[in-house]
Length: 259
Image 1 (cartoon, rainbow, N blue to C red):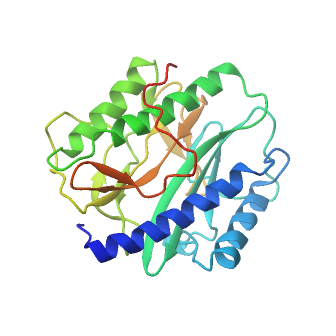
Image 2: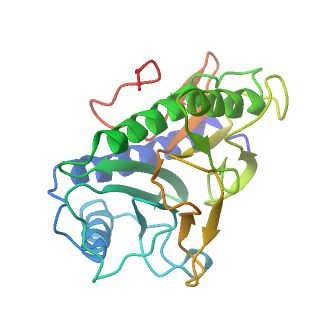
């Protein structure tokens, strides 16, 4: 759970590499691509350009290097050569990467082309909710502080937070303790200590928080068919606060954004 300075140094390398994957994706024209094409592009970049391992491939029997979740798909969307990213979509790409034995995990929801204002608004709310949670991270704070800040921001903006899925500890394994819920009460839960590393990854829905898993056993969708957006970073608790290990170049916190 708590990483040594040497382990944290290696996690910084993994985090920086994973950030570069998203920086590469930011330069792509995703509209018109199949989700499998995106998967193959990311796999080639991780394995060839970065000489790293896509940690999701083979995990729990999953065959691909990323999850690609479009519009009402909350998470765990499976890449498909027949699924085409279209103008107006919102698309979450959730990617993991392992280097030197340590894993980083991050996701971003992309707004594709002329997405409607309501979709853009949801994406802003989800991103800001993640940063609201990250802002709570410091020694002596509690996990409940993170979840409370996330859910409060979503609810204040008329949205809901999915409760079935959450952030998690991460390091040599993709999923370690603790679970980092996206709801909670201030001052409750595990107390944070310097050296802890975990993900913060709220999934924010336009409508109901209720979700269902499709027949493929992977894809999770909103029960009302409304949109869902997710953002995720891997973070470390530092002596004085928080370090975002997967922060992308030019990325700035946006927790104070207005929906």
